[in-house]
Image (cartoon, rainbow, N blue to C red):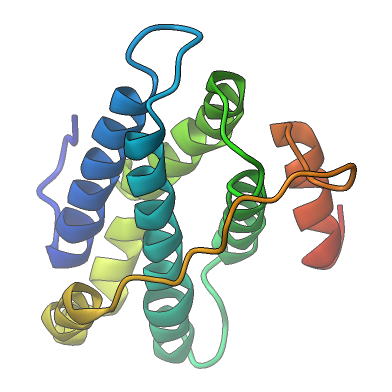
Length: 170
């Protein structure tokens, strides 16, 4: 799908997107059904992927830019927060649709030629391989049990709105 050669950061994180996409496809093998085992693996993998970007990649780019975050960093953090909040309730096939409505444009923004991952590879060229090695070694994240209740978000719109408010504006 990429039109340009990807650097090590783009290759690693794009491959992870493909793995997560395959898990999400397995989670809804037939419209209206949910394979809980596949979704649980997707959930753990997505939370780890978000951690890689939030704990390794975005701080490295900020350092490389003299303390200035990437222009897209705020939007990425809003979307990461929204995705994480949609991973709280017990999953349903409808929830997968809500997740995809954020994931598809989010992943495109990161993967497209000249997108976030290409910017990261350019900015961090001298340390890209070391950063990818840190990502490979990053442990699985602890995953809390699912939680349901009146305050649990189940729509992408509500999750994005709440995450934007917590990241300084809406």
